[in-house]
Image (cartoon, one colour):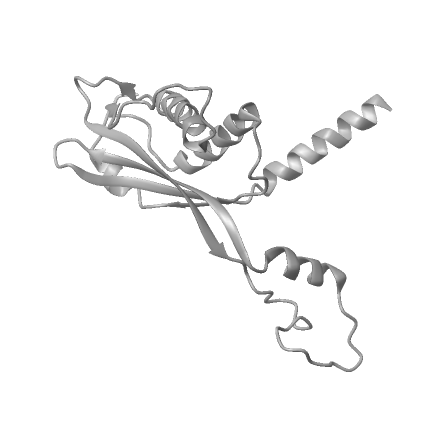
Length: 194
């Protein structure tokens, strides 16, 4: 029984990892790669640590910084404000998107109609209900700026539909964020000289 629970848990974890539901949109990495950067700094200071704030950005800030620093270190970049060639910054913004209308389910329409000899597929009905209407999103834009020219040289936007707005599990939030940022920063090249 215990083995069955472990296998079920592992299968669920793999299934959730495979379809994370995060939309990741990076820009081209060519300009960043051509500069042969090695050193970076954060453009802004960390937000003050507070345990009383319920604002999500105060939970996200240390998690984003820790994950980005670790990923950049794995790629050979060094955080050094004195020698920084590029700066890292992010923008967090909650948003709202219009839910998707069903495209494959021809038997679901906004206008009432009748189709002869056609059974309604319950999965299509459920998807139309789940994906229809306004959906709250959390959006993070991570951007790298060339220090000399003060221009954006690479950026990536991560968007995720909020499944539970009352989620207070900061450990799970940090683990998810780390996994999403690893995927988002995968196109970045290793540091020059690494």
